Length: 517
Image (cartoon, rainbow, N blue to C red; front, side):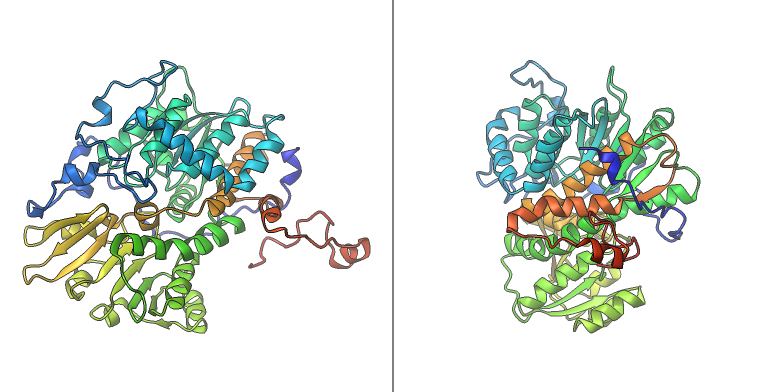
């Protein structure tokens, strides 16, 4: 399979996006001299009922871990443990290597529902298109990601991996990957300092020089650029899959600080439409149900942001009988919401009456303390965007408020008058912290990421400059074609006459880059 054939019509978007107003930087700058342990992201008020911070952070029971085996029952940091896998390697840091058998079963199950990435593995494993690629990965670590990691290895890559979210790691899966000799540095319930330490352990490894980055949120890119600038310049390409990370890349490009090519797979059609829209349409319900047991019929919900994630969440909640409001800054998205039957409002107009608040903007301080002061008792608030900055959680860390841990990833924040709001995952990504994603949709995203890595790694010198690019349209279509056999779908083929009439190649691409699906 020649990946070079899939490079037509790539679009350079690096100069077309004005993101001056986006300043979504990590809470702790790894290049700063401040002690990361004092990060405000994990500070708690002294008035914290039930379990302590250490207990709640390490209590990593997840609905994706049905046996509850994610919880070790001890407060010993994985960084303080001495662990080795059956091969004698200790180049990893996970919660408990002994959980590897359960994690391997999780991976095996995920493979059955990931036809596209498995087909890519089968088709390209002989060619080894990623031979000599050394990839730093910083994404959510779960069974689906493990399938991607093992696919990249089957295609010839050497990888080192850390988590992009302190609550989304499946400990059993991390253990299974460590047992398979993958250098994995991640566990559920990391501190901010653990988070940056884990990424650093992936980047700064003995006798190993990274040449590719696969990022979700831009944290690995940020750390390497700030702490290892000389190493960063040797990177051949960056693949980024989140709105937050893409914003950061465009900022770097605009400021002239992006010295390597980057592929924005977040805005590829197969990622945006399927991972953002169809996946969130299902996982928002799953997350809220598992964490709060709420009845949706008749509830008033405000969704901040009507991008693909907001659209998916709105459709699902409306379908279950919720009254849905939308907040938007973009008139085009606001018009779409209006035409879809939703009322577009300012948050202050409805905040006193709504039962659920969901953020999905990729921005910061969308929901502030002022908003939360006005919420009625029992209001549920959660974030479906990548970054934990959308809800101003730090503003709730004050002596007048009491935090009560009621179950894993669910806090009640109690006001002096006994009003309480229900905060999910401390404002972090709700669907990966409180539930799980459908493996099938992650297969689509994973195939997109793998093809982007192959394209950037094998591109001739000069094809991509130090800028931000979209995934070539041909690859987007290829990812979709890998998944069609699951549905027994049969594509119609153009005749020669039809292809000439439309001005198309019979093998695609079938739409111009500006086409809106």
